Length: 542
Image (cartoon, rainbow, N blue to C red; front, top):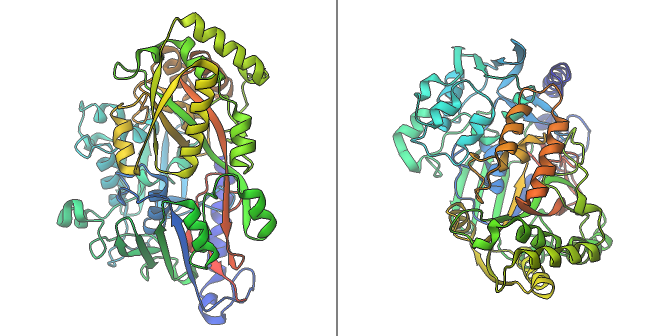
């Protein structure tokens, strides 16, 4: 989105909020649509796993991000189409060729204890995120923003106070970048750049996110949390837009087994179930046409290969990596196993990424029989004989099915055996981060809607590059993309290099298949990042 269109969206949304006033409470109807509202304004949804943290600067988890978006609010939010709209900032201005961004903050933003939300809170949070002492798993994200001194601070060469972010006054926040980055405002919608309440962290330490301790500035506050079972969040009366928040209470239920989750949805215990059991979308769409949905989602499913010495030595041979990838029949996985509108993937960046030009990947144009023949040729040429790979995945029936099918393909076509191992989410993340695997089930969901959110992941120093892939040319090109007027050609070249090297094994591009009760409205179907905010949802009267 251009700066001009962003500002237009900001102004339009601000006008809508002002026009809506407090009509929700006064009339019992939706202020914009006029629909009659239900007396029951609750929303309950399923989580696959317990999120590891609700600390914005420590989060690296998609399900945790869904919760944090409700509890905290950053400078900007997204609307139903993924476009930028006001958050704590009412507007912003770019200057110095998009290297300086100045955000004007609303003066009615409050923390849940009544304290004012100020520019100083953002300064504290951002310095905390980049401080090596915090050990943020998303510290690299601050460096990707091109903020002045971010890289040096992460490396321990400069103090966090030297980060290019400062409070000009309580309600004016300035950010300075080393290089022009036109999509920087979109990056502020991710949790790492949300503000946090300094006094609460200093008072409670690691327990500051516990119910009763947490002070937050979003539309909801954390009410209850029972690990691996459920959590609840309720309306925050101090939120600046609370008069227009319709859903009173949100409950997240941790249900590892998706088939059990579907049973509980049918029993009326859930309003939202995501994703659906593999292969069941067509039948559920026929059975529940107003509730079953498939839409593009900005995530790519792939297998991380361990390029380090802790991985199987055979994986350091590009011919073996290519053979493993080519032997996978992605059409079987997408069309026969998942059946939810997913796309076979032969590159990393999701094909629906804004402004992305799909590259011409050579092996993508082959038939599967041709890919199989080439896989056998490459594997034989490598001279690798008896090969067994340890394939890890986080507990999920879908991940298990995919791993089983791919293991069978590798065995039948290449004679490669796999040892499958599954772990609960937090343990799985630690194992993958420590390179204790040969092959690891992975998925990357865009933190913002631009190709670099995918391709930066495979640069040498990226914090989430768990396979430790390294290619100097890829690093060089991605650095050049930051200052290119139009980086699309660079992204195409990077994708080709990744395919030539088979840095990872792309498997499919996501579609989001889910069930949503017909009386729940306001869902952002066109937001490809799947960034939903409970404050925009509402339940209509039957």
